[in-house]
Image 1 (cartoon, protein in one colour):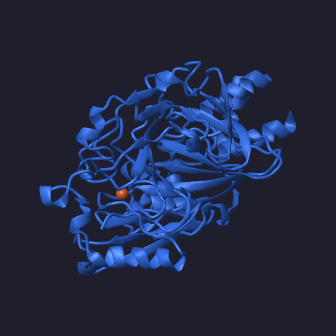
Image 2 (cartoon, protein in one colour; image 1 turned 180 degrees about the vertical axis):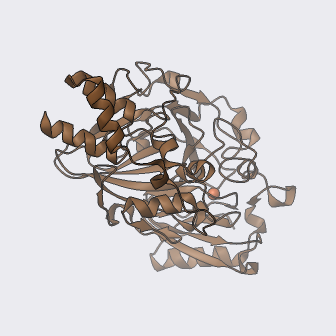
Length: 425
Ligand SMILES: [Fe+2]
């Protein structure tokens, strides 16, 4: 009991449990109200300690990340998130790291969490959305509203799930090796708007409209296949066919087992599916394209957190002009399973399958899937122009309009590996 009490006081000091949760547990342990209040008065840090530096070139989210004391991985891309350094993270009670790539531009971000065998994270709740993808290992998560009943969900490599907004969550490793999770989240915009970690991590509001402990909330069944797909991913003609291309669920047991739907407007031999977890504004899609093919170039706002699920290839990224050679800035990202990158705001980008197997990526974006947003970022206004040609005022470059150097580069890459292009001349 003494160890449990000390651990609870430590969690309270770190603000990893709320004063109300601390009180609830101590009442259950038999402590009296006066004792509990005196602990709260002495342990809860003064509010001023959680204030961020004003008039700083660092955003509140950047300042908060620095204070958490784990590595912050930056740049335009990550070669393999499965191999990134993680270090002990007190708030999480496990190892972790942040991934803050250039193209996130303060909209959304990612963090890694690695739980060793037999261990668990701290119980946490917070006022930002996250969709968690299991990179490795297996385990389970307990999820509950403050004072409510727990649901326990099981996951393993390939699963994706989202504890609903501001619910308590605790993750347990149930396997024999480390369990590594990557969370895609919208904390940057939330922290920058409210600039209060206290508000984000100690907020009592319960979003019962998003989650009310429904028994099948974290089950993928027929009732979770809800829509024909968005304009960002499927053009009007593709969406006319009554297929269920959008999944709305608390959990998908294996994102690699989902049925994909033809999406030729985004690229030859391209297919995909969309996912919205837990009534979130953040949203995810998967895209797969055949060997010897590449997608049409397109552009949109910041914050599409792309992770490669399988295959090998590369992406070209460039700014301002639909023709690659005319751009002032160019970038090439080579990728394989576990690579991550985020195309910068309104940069054109184009994905090329350079390997012998289908290439598959998954992109999570901060806003505008289930709930439309007119902001330039995320799946908002600019994403809706993804399937419309730049000639018609959209953001997609038709194959005939692209810079010929793009095709030459692709054929050159394939020939190095003895592969042939499947793209029509
Ligand atoms: Fe994109």
